[in-house]
Image (cartoon, rainbow, N blue to C red; front, top):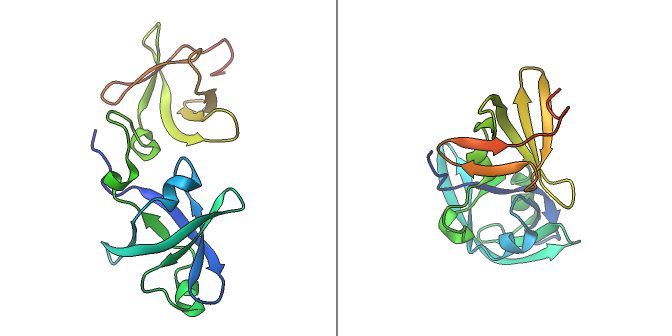
Length: 170
């Protein structure tokens, strides 16, 4: 499995203030991870353009307001609205062996006891206390809480192994 060198880390959703600040929806494990990044990248014409983060702070507990180098007016910030931002994987301090959600998407999901393929991981959502695997099956979608009772192991080369309860994949 190939590691993603520049994963998506957030999206500019609005301007912030009148001097070029932007409001971001961070896609990191927490907004604080985003605020610690020294640089983010914009994809332009197939290439990544670095934007140094001059300052960043958590806003309302789940958003980030940031000042980016070269974005010095409300008009410049407005032009970036809707843009997805990328981070250098090395700047995210991802633990050895950890996988990003983007790297897990598309992994095959198997029954840990029988070995039968249950489906393919299509997404991981974060509705509250625990993540939820969204698994595409022949019958539609199944949602499985990411807890030790159900998730036995995740192997980047072999797949995800679950012990589902009766009715989970019906």
